[in-house]
Amino acid sequence: MAVSLNILIVALSLIALSPLCLSSKAYESGGYLFPQFYDHSCPKAQEIVQSIVAKAFAQDPRMPASLLRLHFHDCFVKGCDASILLDSSGTIISEKRSNPNRNSARGFEVIEEIKNALEQECPETVSCADILALAARDSTVITGGPSWEVPLGRRDARGASLSGSNNGIPAPNNTFQTILTKFKRQGLNLVDLVSLSGSHTIGNSRCTSFRQRLYNQSGNGKPDLTLNQYYAYALRKQCPRSGGDQNLFFLDLATPFKFDNHYFKNLIMYKGLLSSDEVLFTKNRESKELVELYAESQEAFFEQFAKSMVKMGNISPLTGARGEIRRICRRVNPAAY
Image: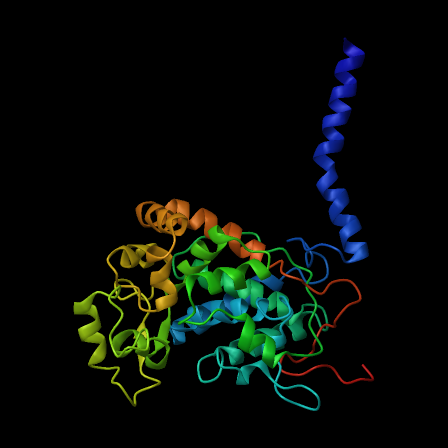
C-alpha cells in the first residue's frame, strides 16, 4: 500500500511538472507561446507596456479602444505578427491602406513609444507583435475590463498583406454568416465571435461604417428596421446621406469609455450601432442567447472575453527562427541585420 501511494505521489508530481517541461521544450523549438517568455530576457517588459498605455489613456481616452482594435486587425491578417504596423516600402504595401484600416486605424505612435522604451531597456528582445498583445490586454484592464495572462514569444513578420486585410477582417455591413465564416477561418467559433464583439463596449465608429442602416440597408431605399428608430433619428442628425463620412459616434452610447457589458444590453434594445453588432441578436438563435447571457452577467462576459482574447492571440504566431524582432515596428530590419 505504501509503495502504491509513493508511486501515485510521483505520478502526480510528474503531471504537475509537465506544463513546465512543455514550456521549456516549446521555448527551444519555438512551438508555443507562454506568459513567462520575457521573465529573464526582459523582466520589466510588461511593466513598461502597462505604464505607457496608462499614459496614453490619460492623454486620450479613446486610445485603449484603438490599441485593442490594432491587435484584432493584426491577428486576422496572416496571424498575430505585427504586419499591421508596417509602412509601405520596397515590396511592402502597407495594411494601413486597406479599407478596414484607412482613416481609422490609430495608436501606431503609442506602439512605437513602447518599442523605443523596450529597446532602451532590453535591445532586440521584445517583438512588436507581443507589444500589441500586451497593449490590448492593458487597454482592456485600464478601462475596467478583465485581465488575463498573455502568452508571449511571438516574432514579427517581414511582410504585410493588403488583400488579406481587405478580405479577412469582418466588415460592419457583412452578414452574420460572413462574419462567422471569417472567424472560423481563424480557428475561432461563435462563442468567440460574440464575446470578442463585446470589445465594442468602448471606442467609436465613423458615419461611413453604418450610414447604410440609416437610409438604404437592403438596397431598397429603406432604413434598417432592426435599429431602434428613435436612435436612428438621432444618428441621422450627424450622419447625413452624403458628407460627414469621418464623423465619430460612440459604439456604446451608455458607457463609451468603460469596458462593461452595456454593449450587449444595447443590442437587446436594438441600439447596436453597427449592423455587424446587431446581427448577433437578430440573425442567429445561439448568438442571441449568448448576447442575453452577457447582458445579464458581466462576469460571464468578462470570463469568456479573456479566454477568447488568449485564443485569438494564438492565431498563427511566428515563433522560433521564423520572422524577426523588429527594432522599429513600422519597418523591417535591414537585410544585413
